[in-house]
Length: 168
Image (cartoon, rainbow, N blue to C red; front, side):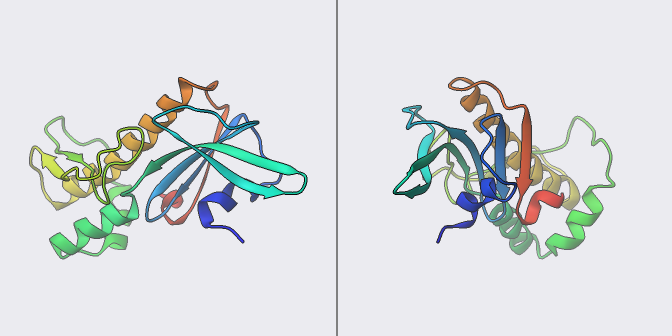
């Protein structure tokens, strides 16, 4: 019995220490298999599996607001997430004046750990530009976790994604 982020790395078979596993749904969890517990603040070390034969560990980074951030935006703006997701893929490049979203939905997770961080936009834009800024904030936070992991482990050779937002 396990949660979704702990199960994702096993979906493709044996754990691969050269892979970063990203489960991106309500939140986003970046997992890197490690052979033993590793003290690597500000990241977490988690047990994926434990039985009589031993334990399998991962270095874990968390993004609290992934789909939760998109849902919060949609509720505030009175828009439908799925409609915006399908249209934002066709936007192409947005001008340099597009807004930037500081994503603290659910608190700012790893590697920053600021529980009461207030989400906000820097700059202005239309609904699609602000929505895209929320999506980009998720990608930025995933990258911040991958960069922090790179301070403790070799950079991954591959990134495997799963979860509801992985198709985007």
